[in-house]
Image (tube, rainbow, N blue to C red; front, side, top):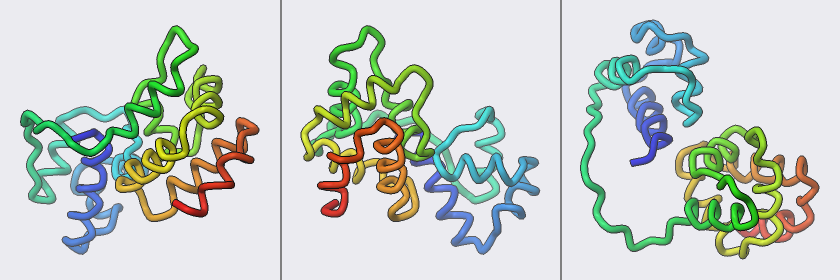
Length: 165
């Protein structure tokens, strides 16, 4: 499980329980903004105890288990590798996922993302959008992807295939 999946599980359980973000945040001793960021996979400065408190309030449990071997391609990892080929410091998976969920380019990672947008195969980019898209509202990752591409002057390539995702 990736960290962003926790936020998605929290949102689903909160909605199923009929709670608003404000109600859950109040019960957990968090601000609504912090809870919103947590649900959206953007991890604010929050400790494990506070996350566990939110999970407890929703009847969820956090456990660490060994993951079985995946057969599906890991587009996030492929995209990070593709975007980091020319650079000493690689683009991390967390940086890439955070960028796609927030629509903001991480500090000192503009060249990495530009390389990714210009050189990665379309199948990797489409798979990346699909893989990260499960942690966000429908259309959010696509919108943020285009926003990043426009900020990096690479939207010409993204526009061609984004409508086919």
